[in-house]
Image (cartoon, rainbow, N blue to C red; front, side):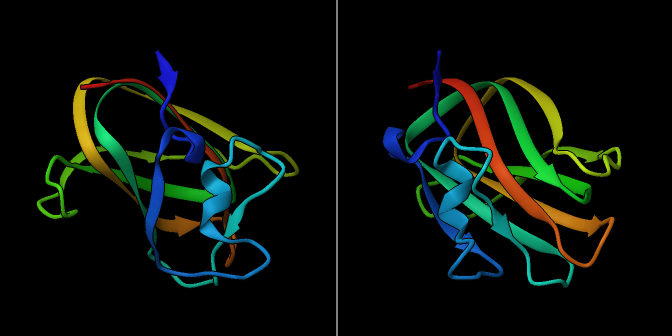
Length: 137
């Protein structure tokens, strides 16, 4: 198993609904929880990860701050269309430290994952890291 959600593994952020040049969406896939992508304050917010090859996913972990509700969708198409819902979850509010939430996605194969933050505990939320245990097909 590898961490497929790293830019060094060929993963790219192909869409983010907001951006700040000091906190770009690429920070999500740099492997460092000290860097992050920050939203601009409206909901929903989303970002899409594209893998270099179809990926069979076992476990996904997301490190975030102030996220309340998150929906994860997958696409097996080469052009980020036809998304299907994988999971929806309400995160616990963790004042002063990062939220770490695991999603068991055993058996899921995807070329793209879409993360939709439907609400937050504040106007601004941040995503620090996505880690994905998986195997390229």
